[in-house]
Amino acid sequence: MTIETFRDLAEALLAKGRLEAAEIDACLADENLVRMDWFLANAVGGIKLKVPEEQAEEAFRVLFTDKYKVPAENDPRCPKCGSGDVSVVDPERGFRLLVLWFIALPMPRAEEVHWRCGKCGARWVEE
Image (cartoon, helix red, strand yellow):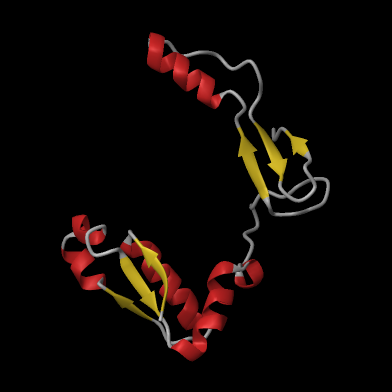
């Protein structure tokens, strides 16, 4: 059963390794074709990660949940709630790119780029 498709071989190999570390049998379909000519990845529908039908549920759990993710020491965390679900917010990015495209001049920032927590909604600027 195909549980995920990848355009890049490196991502596919990492996912396969993650499943094999959890003792789930996994194989990659169309891997060698993409190795020979990576332009064909889109034509064949990408590299397919396949697992046995009876291990599919556990494979989904391993690949698509953070249960097995090992947090790095320097991963950003929310200072308010400690969650790792944080993202960088650049409020003026689209406008600055539009100005750059139309008049070919970079525009200085009026508002700072900041972090936002997806769990509690806190915002902060990292120094």
